[in-house]
Image 1: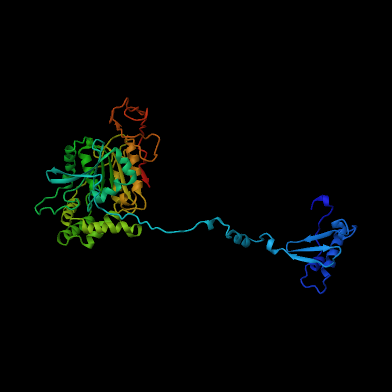
Image 2 (image 1 turned 90 degrees about the vertical axis):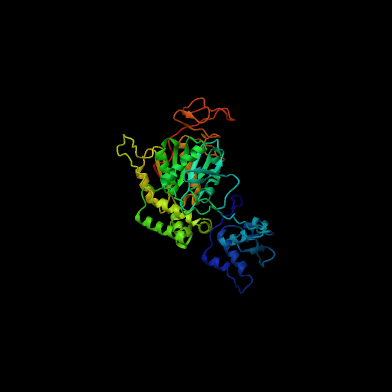
Length: 480
């Protein structure tokens, strides 16, 4: 209490407290008598309870606690007790929580009027006719289908698919991914299909001799000559990666760099040879059987695919059953299992360069659930560690379908390490510029003022654009 009132508080003795809080009183004046005793005990030497509080005989004194208000009047000895439970503050956490759910809560202003369901677009493996042009290129082994995506004046990326697939099933979804679509504004992609593997292809003649893996690699040279391509960036998966590696070994000056996914550099083992022979026989005699389909699913996705992505599994199962020409696939399988060793090796002396390995930069990719991890490790051990990168991407088997974002980011960084600077739709780095400019070996793809680390380029909307050439930002062995 303020000191100016000339009063103070002190705790009451136990007997006085009990007397003032007794619920049942036989005499109506017991409460008044107890109050008088209490005040007389605390204000010794004063002029009385009424004078000490009110200052005069006609004054009214009030004594309050948390539950009741006791009003005392000098002329009326009878106490008046008034309940204040309805106006008191919340005294517990439960009461506070209840007060928080009163109608004054702001959540009461939100009204749910309707619910609209939106289903994602169904995943399909049908051909996208909007930005792809298909052409037939004649070779010594017959015609092959080449699908072209992008501006042909831009640097070329050449792809080759895996067994059981074609460019639509293997690459179309990946290259239409949002990050890759922005990246490919500066490239032109040439999708090469093995003979008879395109969608809707008729069965090859019975006397047709399917080309070997080396002959398939030589077909790429014919495709480059047909489109007047001086050099390419190779992008292959499985059997297609093996074909591109063979082409790079035979024509190292025509390949800028390689991105190989699940690439095998050795001959087929006995287990692989046995399974593929059985699959080839079933495809010729019975068509696409359940056993062949399950082997192709394991080959591309590994184990536990249905637990990771059930919808994607169903799409590819339907594709293998309805869109694959079984006889043509059997011929491709026979060619793949008869592949020879790449005969490459790493130079043990760090001061020397091996002539029996890939001389261009190589990005070697596999998935954590892929059955081809050991093949990629073997290939990595045979490559030059100064220009090769091995990557294992987590939580996927078919990396292009299950982790396209990680692969596209790795591919972009890989190209930047080779001297390509690309500006995507989203902000990536301050060194990116619009357009593509290749810098290396003293030449520039577009006219430049100088070929140094920082190059001023003409033909750009901004006054000056700088390209910073750096080393490959990806480490030798990376796990994403």
